[in-house]
Image 1 (tube, protein in one colour):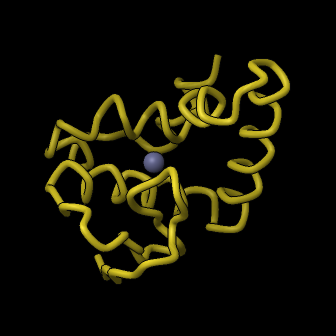
Image 2: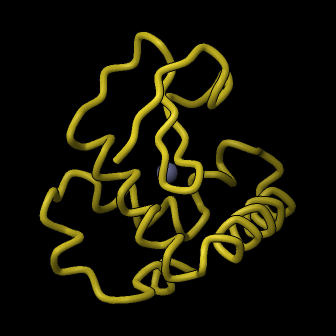
Image 3: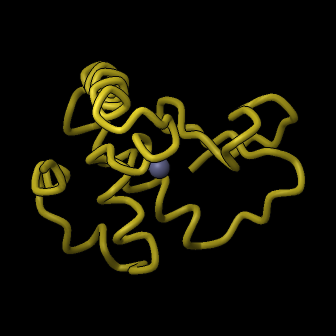
Length: 108
Ligand SMILES: [Zn+2]
């Protein structure tokens, strides 16, 4: 996975962002195997949704969750892609056993 350290992306509240399979990490953030695994889970999700539909779904679901919860960060943690990634980031073998479209079961 390509990684680019920088001062701008992903913004104030986050440590890293995966844009089209390239990981942008803020200066000073430690790149751990767990962080990389989390982002690789997102890459798998992206590929399953042909990239563009991943981002569309991500933004729409974040907004819908925001309408439900009225808190952007709480809404972020409820996005199905994030729920799958956070729940499995510590399992470094997860992607070897993950089934296609597994994010779907993290929708409520
Ligand atoms: Zn994530």
